[in-house]
Structure formats: structure tokens, C-alpha cells
Length: 340
Ligand SMILES: [Zn+2]
Image 1 (spheres, rainbow, N blue to C red):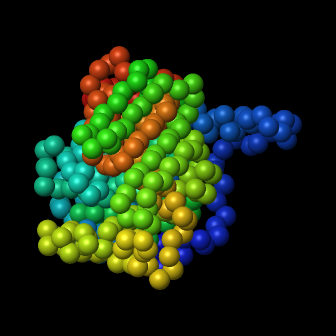
Image 2 (cartoon, rainbow, N blue to C red; image 1 turned 45 degrees about the vertical axis):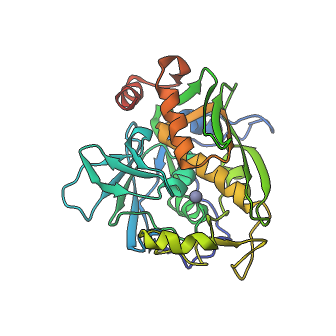
């Protein structure tokens, strides 16, 4: 199946049924069924491979990307298919080589072979609880599609998910860890009893953005309904400067909000009045998944972007006292030990 950017983000879709054990007919309303518990505690992958084609936001290059199922313990791994026999690039925080405008990863042995703008796809994978996938891509950047995570979310639902016979590892945050910048921006993780909850706030001079805040727990439903459709944004005055340094070549009103003071240039306007902060929260969902596993934690960011999000993960993994791996087997623990 091939998905292109022409598919509207509001396209109604019937999610594929995951290959879960049969749901018990005697399950009590309001209590997790055995199938739900199995899905939450076991690793998953895609049920089948799926492809999309589109333009890279910054490179302007046309790219083809295929997401393949992968075995338990594989993790989320990218492979550049246009660079010959090149090493795989795991989507891990310590493989991040640039965070100026997007999250860019590369393998340490081949730093020039990169995959840029992975955060929206990583957000959709995180929210859909896809633990394992091999992502083939024939260019330097993921397709931007409509500038949000909605079409990646759509893609994952089309592919469906498969539960694997291996426990899911979760990174439990044990201590408060915070990173900050001189302008008041910060990002922090705190211990939490269960799951991952996120809060993000921003403060922009442009009056159409101003001060915005959004908070939510990370579930597939909340992600889909509240942040997945929120697009990336850029100030109109920044576009020329970005193009002069070779960025934003693929940008257009079809894949980014262009802010102009008290309004936006996009003819259809905003998808939500708080689309800006919700997009930043969605970016954090993607960036945090570069921990290698989902987190049991509370995340809060203020004016936090890819750089601070990545610094936060590096600060967490700088001390073994900040975190522990739970619900894992030896293989998953070894995977993390290599990256930390
Ligand atoms: Zn983004």
C-alpha cells in the first residue's frame, strides 16, 4: 500500500485489529481485559510493511520510506537504502547529531549518512506503542507529509500491530532531572507512578501564538485527538534565512504553518487555536522515544525544543541513579546498556 501526502489528515479510518489473544466475553466494563494487559506489557511491531512517498521539509528531496516489521528487541532502526552497504542507524538519543530545526540521527561510524526530521514519525511510533520497526528510507530526511504526525499515525494504523512474545521494557525515572537555558527555557522529567504524562508551555512574541500551554497523558487516543494533527510552524521572516543556509527547501503552506504577526498565511487557518503548543508537545513525544523505550515519568517543558529534549535524555542517562529499566528481559537490558 502506498500513502501520499494527498490523503487528508481527517480521513476516517478503521484501525486494523491487532493480533491479540481473543477478548474475554466475561471482561468487566471499566477493567482492563487480558488482551489489553497483554498488549500493554508485551512488545509489538507492525503487522505488515507499509510505504509512503513525500518531500523532505528541509532538503526538498523526494523520498520513499518503508516501515517493516521487526523482531522483539530490535527497537526503532533506520536504514538509508540510497547509500550502498551502510550501517543501520538506531533511533537513540546518543545518535543525535543535530537539533537546530529537527532531530537528526547518524551512525557514529558514518556521520555523514544521516536521517533528519525523524521526530514526527517517532511520535507516532511512541504513541502507537510500536516497539520494533526497521525503516528504509532512500533520502536524507523523512517525508514531511502535512507537517504533523497525523499521516504517520494513519500509516501505522493501516499497517496494524502485532504483539510479540517478549516483555516490553519501560524506563522508570527515579529522580528529578532538569536541563535549562539562559532564556528561561527548560525541560524536566520527574518520577511518576505509571505511564508518561506531558506538559508543554510556550511564549512567543507573535500575537497569534502568544502564551500557550497543553498537558495530557500519552495514550494513542489522546495523541490522535489532541496533538497528532498539529503542524510544524515557522515565522515568515525566518523563511528566507533558512533557505539561504539550505533549509526549508521543501516547505510550503501545505506542510507548515507560516506565522505573520497576528495571523497565519495559510488560507485555511489553524486546525486548533493552540496548534502551536500542541505541536511542540507532539515533538517532545517523538524526541523522548529516543530513550529507546517509553518512559514512566512526568515530562514538563517550557519553550523546549529538540535541543533541550535531547539534552534532557543525555542528562538522565548520565547517571545510573536517575533511571531503571522495568518489565524487561536480559536482551532489552543489554540493548540499553550499549546505548547509555
Ligand atoms: Zn515538529
